[in-house]
Length: 262
Image (cartoon, rainbow, N blue to C red):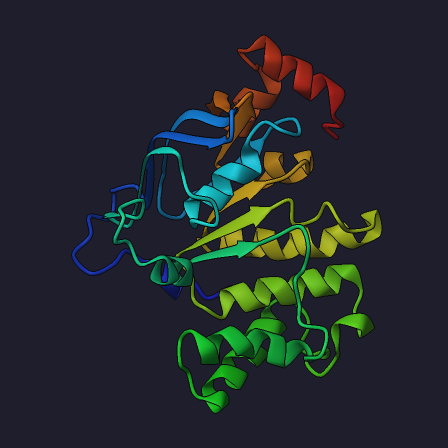
């Protein structure tokens, strides 16, 4: 697979390179009387791959959805590239242009072929010409290994191929950060590897990534940092070898004991 273009991972002009690309300060999110996030504070460095683990209901997906404002935080602050994106006047659409997200479900338009699925947001949001959007769409589909499937419709593609189209669609917007929310959990086991290979290429190319997953092998091999969440808080974090081999928390040990670490 060709190398992933890392131009979009560079710091904005005038921004200190060593500043975190994302700073989360005391983030809270409640749904009615249910507290899902209970004071998350976290810095993400530029070019870092952070894998978030935890049981169902621990707040992992809600954290990602707060980062790109699909969910409105109840309290706290998120600073992205020096901008407080939780401020009332923050431009949510501009934020999402710089923060791509890949969901568990592929969310492709069934009436559009792969290239036009990747083109659509470019023309509607970035106002690129059809010619430029198509060129970039083809480039991104080639990068995710689908250069020979550009004219295929979603129902002609496997689940893994559809997810790679979804990744290409996000990459075509030239995001500075990629969020992956259980991107492989809806796939048959034999289709998972192709999607994880694309994610590995992105990581090796320097893309800043926050990945919610149960793929422990990916976390071991690719993550710069592993975060374990439970009950809406960060229980433990560290390098993969530290968290997997020497977990400090009993809750982390219990979780890892229940999942396949091979």
